[in-house]
Image 1 (cartoon, helix red, strand yellow):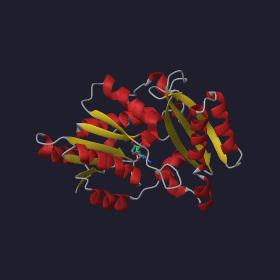
Image 2 (image 1 turned 180 degrees about the vertical axis):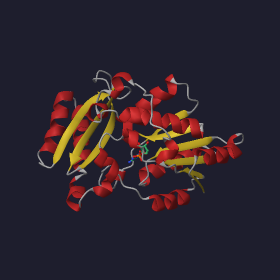
Image 3 (image 1 turned 30 degrees about the horizontal axis):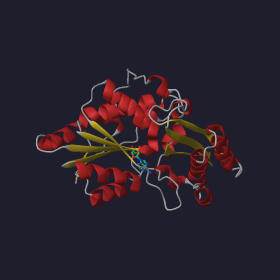
Image 4 (image 1 turned 90 degrees about the vertical axis):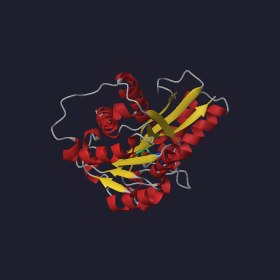
Length: 277
Ligand code: AMP
């Protein structure tokens, strides 16, 4: 496995293979877990060359402390990627990605004003720019994202379609711990007690899912899920919304997503579940 720190290095490395192989790309912020590895597996299945980037992108953090405390486990990440059969890792410094302060910004319209966008102001602008830069550097034929960050996937879909990036996007299913908790780099920051209770987030989503499936109103389903979480007295529910899965607008189709963000202690966790009526 080749580890590249500079843009020049990774471009040269990719150029050596470009004409003969399709390139599967998995952008990450590191602190890797089996969710990330499932994306690597999908990339490997579909492509001759698999590239992963690890970059904790400062411009997508709206909270300085969150950026500072974001888990960084590079040595372990490289070991995991090597074992998973990744071919090239792009591990740039902040100076390599942002040699000068950014002077442009990308707008994503309504999609960046709701759910995550409403609670993390500027987050998707940061995501949009860094993914655009990474796609220009790696020029992947296929790029892999997780449904875990459903809104992020929809933002990237807009970016790729409206700016004509030539990459096929794949949205991979959420990988969960045995107790249902969605895997996340942030989970390692949970205390033992918080970790024990964290699976209730998925339980709340499943409760809403079951209520909708049994014909109850979306409002009832939403309220029941929020009540389940509130009753524990330790979750702060930022939002738990039932929306159209394709654009996260207010639910009025048969293809829905139940999306939530909660804070547990000082850790912010997100999860979602798709539902077809
Ligand atoms: P991150 O390192 O958190 O920026 O995540 C990198 C990619 O991995 C994103 O496309 C995420 O949606 C995806 N991802 C994170 N957690 C999971 C998970 N539990 N299952 C599947 N994909 C995930």
